[in-house]
Image (cartoon, rainbow, N blue to C red; front, side, top):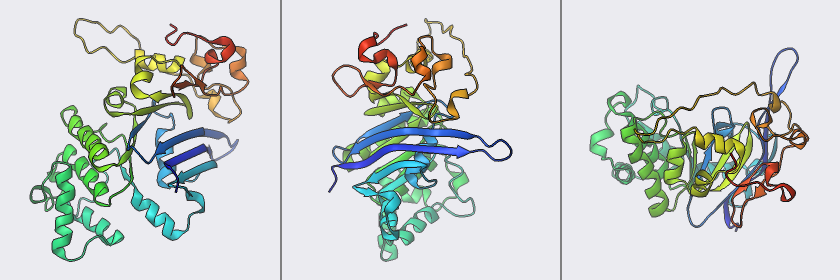
Length: 334
């Protein structure tokens, strides 16, 4: 059996535009990731809108197909799996989506969400067993069946709806949950409770998470490893605290510096500069995507996408020619 729970090898997704003068848009390019079975971990995929985060989630969940590369779960290449293996994969890999409103059918009570899962995966026996299964799953996320199961979605808060989605995913006893922006549409006061559920499911139930977000503060709170994407490529990866505390890639430095300091005595005088058009994203053979915005850009940056260079002695890596052996730069070069 494989020691890795999830392996993504050189995953690339290219979309073709319709109409005259068809063009290609590289949504994800040569993405690699490994999540071990033990210990369970929270791996964060971070980046601005359009960086390829949701494309990666859709590929893992099977909503779209790779243009090239492999996704291997517990030693099984998903692209060659048969129907029985795919059904088992869908049980082992669950999802919690961004919109806590759009995932519910407003015509059904909340217990219908659990009934669908129980029926599909044949989890319960009689009515008492099914109710007990629902109750235990809700208790894990801090809810009680008598408070929510017979209500309609509009009668619940956004935080309750999102925790119910966590309970539904947990009920199937998965090995991994893909959480795509699970707290971005929830009030700030409720985000902590949902993040706490994720940490407890990891530590107490051994469930790994692929946490997709644009919010570096929540990534810093709960992430073990982080991959920061820029226009479909990995800009930097490594231990979450090390990457955010000491960013190395010029884009990641800019990203971290743009976060206002939570101190009323420190004025934030930074400007938000909108990026130029994604002229570097039309081919997998183009150079560094960050070239138009980088103050360190060199001629070689246009020749090919820089590989990931190791920073220090751990797994901290940055995709920047500044860190090539013959041209090493300080970790926080301004």
